[in-house]
Image (tube, rainbow, N blue to C red):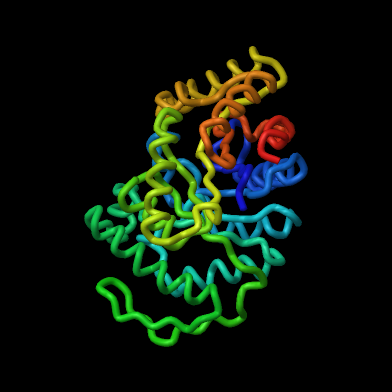
Amino acid sequence: MTLLGYQIPNFTYPDVPAEKLFATIVAQAVEAEESGFDTVFVMDHFYQLPMIGTPDQEMIECYTLLSALAQHTSKVRLSALVTGNTYREPALLAKTVTALDVVSGGRAQLGIGAGWFEQEHDALGFTFGTFTDRFERLEESLHIVLGMLRGERPSLDGKWYTVRDAINSPAPLSRIPVMIGGGGERKTLRMVAQYADESNLICAPEDIGRKLAALDEHCERLGRDRSEITVSLQTYACIAPTHDEAVAEADAFIARTPQAAPRRASMIVGDPDEVRARFEALKESGVDGFSVNLMANGHIPGRVGLLGETLSPIVN
């Protein structure tokens, strides 16, 4: 389960040309594995998100990249944070995640969500639909995907999807954990309670208690053992050996990527002691662990390793 996950949300790095891009990504994944992270995540998007950059910035297709990273790592779990259900047909998604599990030696994880980035859908021809549509589709998809991942041959004649005796062979090498991302208290956390092994919360620190209480209520109503579910919090950090270096690297990122300026206030910035103290306080709010990205400086050699060494004692 994810107690400390490293997310790679962006692939636009200063002075890194296209031919060196993959090597820079691999270096982050390897540092993550060697420094105590248990999971490496990449986003399942085709356009860069508006709070991180511009739509034309580099975005590598998620599952191709994860399968390639599997060949350069040996211990970390590999996952999308999170798969956009709206552009992944469920039976194909089950086959894709299973393939990742096979090529990684049993290290695949399924992160999934309802989808939300409308511009991406409109530009590329994926059906977006209403909020209700997207959650109905996600629930139908979970019936199919989970059945196929668990060795069943699911059939469904649903409103959105139809499958008949769907076969998934070869089967996964491991029991693939399922993480649902988001913080919606009525729909998302109810689906976590009903279907998932993990919840990746996206919320402000002051809202964590309310989100956990909502999850507890859904588990009680559905008869689910709440202790079976691991809860991680999605976070942003910028760590460096000194406070001044961390601030300078965060500010340099905002200067070259002004779209990300709103994220600066929620970014945990500082030296290892400062970063550790902030995450220790978050841990006391009741979450089990964290997914962390270093969008500002993860491409700088040593920064991912420094973060892992700083945070792994908190969650282990």
